[in-house]
Amino acid sequence: MRKFLLNAAALVLASSFSVASFAAGPVGSGPNPFTDCGIGAALFPDTHWAAVSSNVIWDLGSTAVTSATLSPQTCSGKKVKVALFVRDTYEQLAEDIARGQGEHVAAAFDMFQCGASQRQQAINEARNGLSQAVATPGYAKQSHLGQAGQLYNIIENAAYTSCTI
Image 1 (cartoon, rainbow, N blue to C red):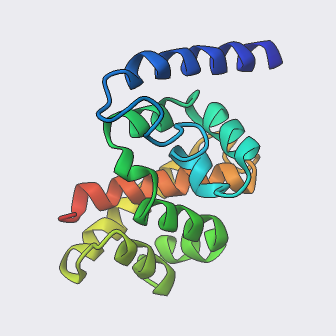
Image 2: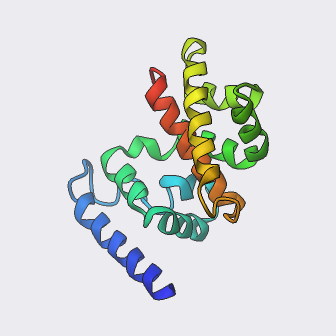
């Protein structure tokens, strides 16, 4: 398993160099995809080794590399704030989503600037996504961080699908 992860990390790192050459600005001026972008950077903003590990484990770093090369502005700002919020309030947030209302779920969608008129549709979509995730075999055995990362993706998808962002 360790060899697989090392090979995957090397592959992602190599692909980031080839894609990064198309980015605007001088070489090295953009964010580091493994420490500044992706779910790893959002969950571990001050612990670079943990950010790198999380990005590689989560999706072999593809989301982080894509963010850094195609939309470096997404490597900070509201996405990071939402991810940290999800990590820190996972239990309350999941409960609010399951109920279809609550201050934590409202706050999460507010961070994505989801208007009140669109929020209920986004909450319903997140509720659907969370119920599917919880029903997946192995979900309960995931770490808190794994569950929080999955919930972040559900909320982000619901916000971008249901809200005018």
